[in-house]
Image 1 (cartoon, one colour):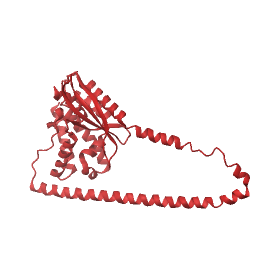
Image 2 (cartoon, helix red, strand yellow; image 1 turned 30 degrees about the vertical axis):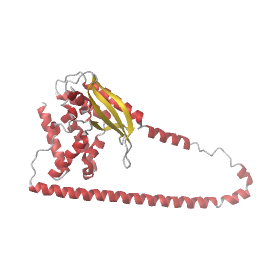
Image 3 (cartoon, helix red, strand yellow; image 1 turned 180 degrees about the horizontal axis):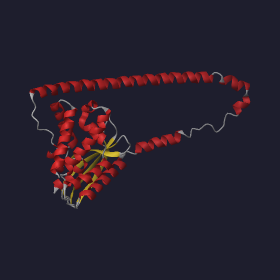
Image 4 (cartoon, one colour; image 1 turned 60 degrees about the horizontal axis):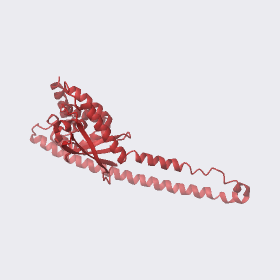
Length: 313
């Protein structure tokens, strides 16, 4: 019972059924590592560390350059102010009438008001209320898609899962999360390809685990709180209980943040304290090191998708 409820709500959002760290269908490990591959893996790790240090150094250099540009802009602005102020005095002395005509309704401090209100509106897009509402919509859609239904084939469940993912997650954000520092190894064009492959991998690996979900499944929101992230983007954690008729209740934490396109999305789900993304990140990192690069991970993922798709025919 609990397995199916967890599968419906959380496997539906890239989480393994029954809160397992990784679904067996998604296992990419199993290729024995030779001595040569081990040496390559160590070299890969060293290269990753060096590239990460280079990225951080570049970020610091960019920040310093930006600070210099802003300082120069302030100097130029002060010069322009000084130059414009000099001829203003004689004009006032020569033409006192003009000075009297100065109080014209050109003092448009009005734009500052809509700008400030607009900033507040943008900041309010991701708040406790919107995060809670997103979880309620997502869980309701998951229940509508899976509860009380028996699928004739995994393909039907996978089709429902694709719809949910299109509404409530961001593949590129998730790709960056599960690859970690290896994300910077991918060229810009290949990042989009990986994001699409990851979504297909999630659908094929986890969609087939959803079957015979009780119609009485529910998700109750208990609390919403901001996620402390001193150096990261703002996010909220929504605490919920999930189960069926108050039985087999499971603690579930949903992390909600904003994608680059402005949508609010589910970026993580922890079931009884277990995050599938953490397990997936460790799994993917292991494959990258074992195979000597991100290309090896892509090959393993494509192979798994092909194999599971063939088994479902």
